[in-house]
Image (cartoon, rainbow, N blue to C red; front, side, top):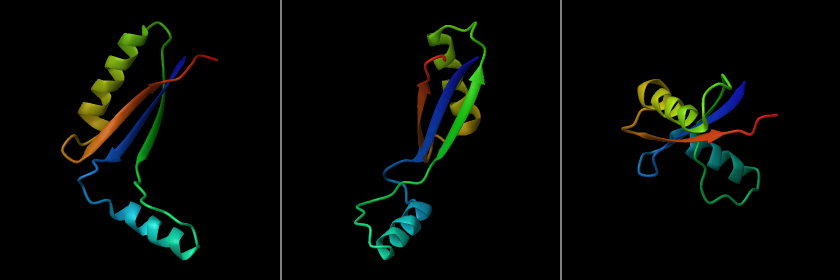
Length: 83
């Protein structure tokens, strides 16, 4: 199996209320924080029979069709090294 990580975050121009709440809480703890963006991390195992390009295209399709809302979120696909 090959591990694919997909990071989904609100676009920079979209208000992130979860990130803002975390930032305020960190500041109350005395942490000097400029900004916080809260997102989602998906770790997906896929068959090794797919090439890197096929894996990326399939992960990109999953994001566009299910995992991310392209109107308000951006995403990053990371193909992890095989162990």
